[in-house]
Image 1 (cartoon, rainbow, N blue to C red):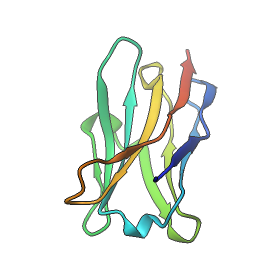
Image 2 (image 1 turned 90 degrees about the vertical axis):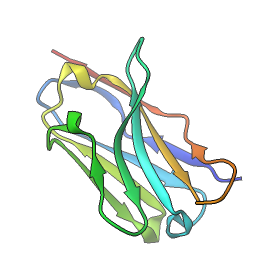
Image 3 (image 1 turned 45 degrees about the vertical axis):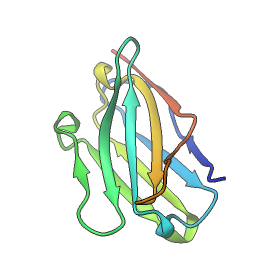
Length: 117
């Protein structure tokens, strides 16, 4: 059973920065895709960035070049750096991973980001 554990969220003032982490219980190199998503209060889940094992990162338009994804295969961890945080970034941020052809993918429990204006 794959486990994904997000961390790094918190309460931050507008204009600040955070780096979120997603630690996997097994090698992230074995996933065909990973991604960061977020869910704001009263809203549906939306993609922030998708991270294919092969190919280019894809960021949602809403990230406005303020979000940067990176990965450390040795630590089985992917990161999400968020700069110039805005109140509309307030959400639970979730990590996703999966393999093509398998019947399910995996989600972490999420980490709360709250931006105060």
